[in-house]
Each structure stands twice: as structure tokens, then as C-alpha cells.
Length: 234
Image (cartoon, rainbow, N blue to C red; front, top):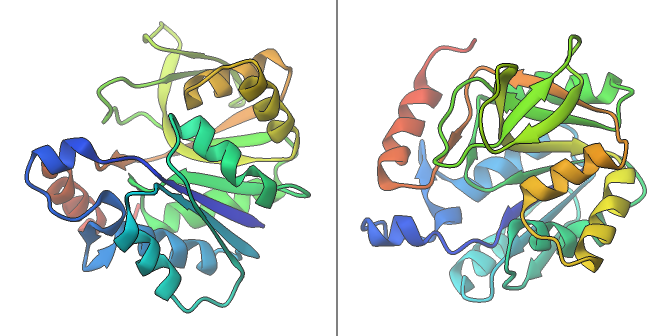
């Protein structure tokens, strides 16, 4: 299975709060965020890795290029207006099969991620979306599900049936890339709008709950993520 990482954001909030490293190189348990994800993906059967960084992140590009990896690496260096556009830049390397995509600042327990990937390999749905009932985002995207976990809507505000929020972890098949192409052609942006379009286009998406997913957006999130990763496995 192919894996991809969106690491093209500016990380401006971290910079404003005094964090000197660009977000992909922020260390958790001594390991840069981007390297942590790369090794997790390799450990979970990656056949290829695709990464996008922005044009200003010269040291991130150099760091990724310096890694010696056992699978092909596709590195895209491009500044984009949104994560959805970054995803589109990676999409040529994800065609022909199923894939997993995450943002670089998404923190989860490795053992939970392995169970998630194993579930996706057995799943017949068009996508298995990583979700959590732990709200750690300033503007969460709520995920509304039916019995059995099928997703029927994504909303900006919580509804009575909103059990989960999106965790920024997406396992999808090739149908999703056709939807992505159409969204880009029509001038849509933002990953949440892409996810909504997956539903309106009739794709069968299911939710897979993680106990907790943390986004590293602020300096305080680094300590929070360190503490979370040191907690016993669920």
C-alpha cells in the first residue's frame, strides 16, 4: 500500500510561539515528526512513500532527502494554497491502488495505527477515515455516522449524532482521486470540503475510532503529545 504525508504548511503559530524548527522537524521522543511517520508507514507495509513540503522549507527537503529508506520515496517541493491542493500534488503517486494519507502534525499511538491499517486491508468500503471523540482542534470537523460506522455527513458544528471529529488520517481507494480531480477543477479547496464531496459523490466511507489524536499546532501541543505517547498502550 502507498502512503503519503502532507507537510507543506507554514507552521506559523509554532513560529509565533517561539518554536525555531519548522513543524515537520519538531521532535517528539527525540524523533522529528516527519521521520516518525515515515518509519511508522514502513513498519506497516508501505510499498512507496510520497511527501510534499513547501518551497521555503529547504532544511526539511534536505532532511527527507538524506534519509536512507527501503522503499521508493517521491518528494514534491511546492507551496500550495491548501492541504487539499497538496494532496492533489501527491495524487499522481497514489493511483492504481489503495493508500493512506496523513498530515505531518497528526499524533496517534503506533499500535492503534497498526490496527487501523489492518482493518483497512480487510475493509470493503471505499474509505476508512481515522476519527476520535477527543476534540483537540480549534475548528473541528464533526463526523456523523450511522450504526455500523458508515459516515453520512461531515459538519462544522456538532449535531446530536456527532460522536467523532476527523483526525486527519485518511485511508482511501482510487475512486477518491477522481473526486479530488473534480473538486480541484471546480475551484474547491480545504480537505473538509473534499471529504464532504466524497459523500455527495456516493462513496462508501466508514469511521475507525482512535482513542485520541493530537494535532501539533501550538508550542503547548508538543508537551501534550509527548505525554500522550508515553502513556500505556490502549
